[in-house]
Amino acid sequence: MSTSDRSQGRTRGTTPRIADLASTPETPRTPPGRSNSSIYGSPGGFRVEDEYVVLEVGARFVRGGLPGETTPRCTLTFGPDEQRRAADYRQWDPEHHHSRRKRKRDQAWGQDHELYRLDINQVDLGLVEDKFERAMREAFNKYFVLDTKPRRIMLSLPPKLPHALMSTILDVLFGNFQAPSITLLSAPVLATVAAGLRSALVVDIGWAETLITAVCEYREVNEQRTTRATKLLSEHMANILNAALDDEPGAGDPKAEISFEEADEVLTRVGWCKSKPRSNRRTMYFAARTSPILEEFEDAVESPEPTINIPFPKHTPPTELTIPFTSLAKPAESALFAPDMALNEFDDQELPLHHLIYRALLSLPMDVRRLCMSRIIITGGGSQLPGLKTRLLAELEALVSQKGWDPVRNYGSASARHEQLMNQKRENLELRNQEGEDKVSESLDPETPLPPGLQNPEEDFIDAKLSHLALKNVPSASLVGGVIRGVDTLGAWAGASLVAHHRIKGIVEIERERYLQHGLQGATREKEVSVVQQRQSMGPGIGMGRGGGDRASWTLGVWA
Image 1 (cartoon, rainbow, N blue to C red):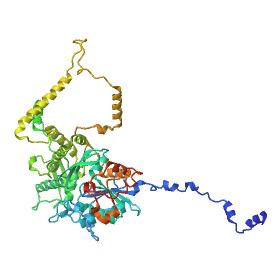
Image 2: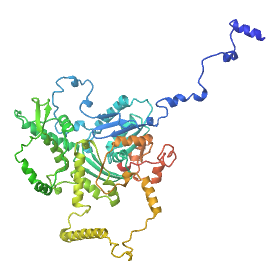
Image 3: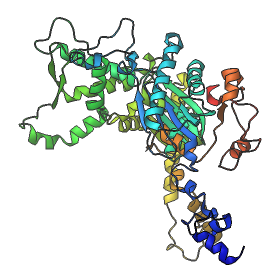
Image 4: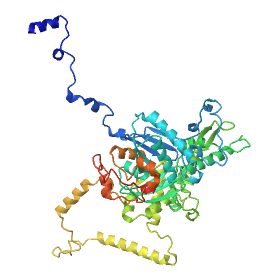
């Protein structure tokens, strides 16, 4: 077939061949080298953050979100409204919001608003599992909005959580949400990470207890606990409000008993903490110095004490309580500090906060104490009370200046001898300081050289340069030590988000298959991990070998 025939065939409408189709003009195609550009352009193509979900579980809340974010996407609380059954429409009843809920018989204060309690004998683990599962389904379906791909979970838990509660939480995450692995991290260590520190004294004022943990190089070295926390603070606030309502004119015959929701709202909105009061000696001293000035204002009219109006629409009848503003600081004074009681009247589990912090610092070694006392992190829900952080640091500083760092409280018959030795040490220290300040005048005899002990040492430029370079590479925050100082933190969830974002593997990593086979009994009793193994598990590309990534056994760490 000739060329003219082929051209005539195309013009006459005959079917063209494949070669002819390849030569016809068409829409430009994407080059093969750029075919995968949409993967990098999509918001979730190679994002490391999508592989993890960060969770923080507390006694009254669950926080959740994705790594790399500064704040959690949701903070879910537990209460009677979140535990409604199907076909329960009482929340739309107009009278339901104006009626006060009464506490059930033999029910603890705020028990309906708790996820779990540390006393396992009084906890229904099946109810805890249902509450946690419902909260997790709401978080995944409403706030996370992820696909069906299983996600690894970075879980922040309080240290030494009972194994029964931990097993209940892990059963929900492994069984219902198909998590391939869960990394457990301690909340005090994460609070230290979120503060940008390696060592700190973390004071976590939680719901049922206050936990004081000394962290040195990301390791928990000491722990103290007390029951003086937000729960006791809320109870004291309810007692003060009930007494004020009973003293109101026109109060009914039955005594007032406000609900937990009302007391918690008053504590959150208008509760506060007083500053540290001065001692009687300093007060008398300043009064004696300022008495001529105060005499000029003897005839001045004192301003009335400020008051605040608190409405109680659920009270019978509805009323508006007028209470002095200083009365709202009494719950924090009595619940957290207890200044009216002697120290020997407390049990070991109910010490005031400032005494417990002092004992925690006193039990540390000297070098660890120097680091921790300058990095005191006060966190938790109760720490948001205005004035509480300042009061705690002031009380702690007063205890240190009064008692020092001597662990012995009573020397018995040797008290006089000990006091004499302490006075002698103070005198020797003052004498040395005075001798160091005295200098021999060179104008007396210029020709006579000074003794070697009084001569200034020659400056070594190499040592000065090396010390300058050493200080240049060290952060300024790590150089502070030996003084009482507080440090702010972003919280345990922010620390877990930062750790998951940088793909730092924790010591406690639980695989799904191994947990479903043996449960918590499959963990070994070894609490310590070598530094080499821990360093091998850090970084995105490191730790994928046998030593760091795939462990033959796993441990529970501080929860063992």
